[in-house]
Image (tube, rainbow, N blue to C red; front, side, top):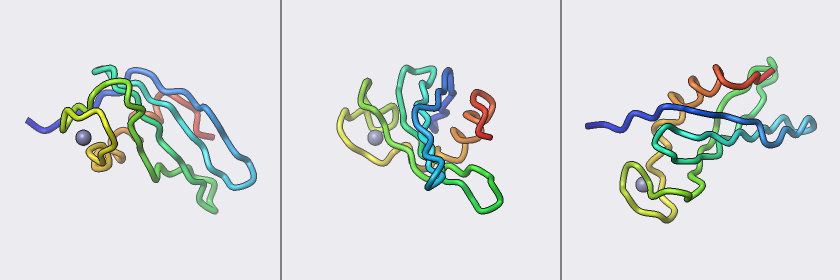
Length: 89
Ligand SMILES: [Zn+2]
């Protein structure tokens, strides 16, 4: 069964007005924590460009507890859900 991430919490942890980079820490319902990086487009729109796990739990996809890229394909979906939790301006 494909992994279905479900965002339980999301919080903006940093926002650099100068370069438009924003970091959001996301807690998923399966207790995985991820950091999502956003860039600001010239139009002002925030787009999620990067996701990394915070290694609090083994990866929900490959079950390893070290660096992997399993969450990358889920970035658009997680980004979509995050926009309901935080005001991305
Ligand atoms: Zn993995």
